[in-house]
Length: 257
Ligand code: CA
Image 1 (cartoon, rainbow, N blue to C red):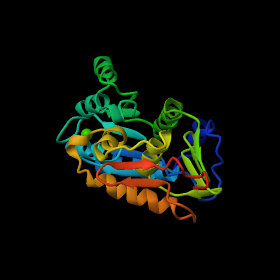
Image 2: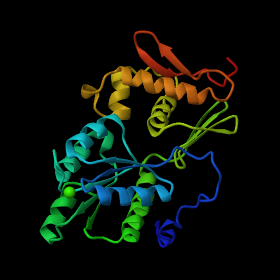
Image 3: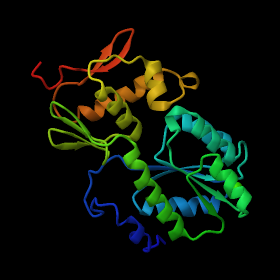
Image 4: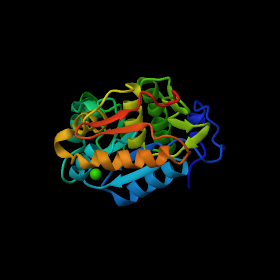
């Protein structure tokens, strides 16, 4: 029951919707909603539009999840068990890594004062239940369009590797590589400063945003996944492991070295 009318809102997306896979890492939307039926309905419709969706019912779980993986957008219910949506929104804005993360708040409260409160806590948009699905979808697309240019645009290249920040595509020797959003951010971060060694905790700070609550081995796991993605195309490993120090993007990569 995906609604067709969202297409109007999506027309600004110039990438062909019919392009076959491979595509960029799917845009990940985190749906934090304790009403199971609504959460499933949202998830179904978002997935029908090509988004990846993760559903969480509790506020405290969402809070933890957001320190592990940063989605592209959060749909956040106001009233949640554990920690309220309003508080989660405040925390999202307080953390450097999620400061610009687009947030749409859902709420049954339609009073103007509540709306103002939600927006003052940093929600980008605010939808009052019951809402129309096409309207919500339009807002999702609009926010994603708005959010994307805020992330530095342009592309990074080294050797046969190209990372396009706008379309979230990584190509090697012209072939598109598949990787998750965390691996993409990791690569972008390393690639933006070739040769510079980043410690695990620096990477946690920059890519995940909260070094204190995550095991540093998480970085190794994602570096491993990133390497695997990079090496699906034959060639040199562009990531250097610097023993006892961390990781760097090899500045000699692509220079015949
Ligand atoms: Ca609720």
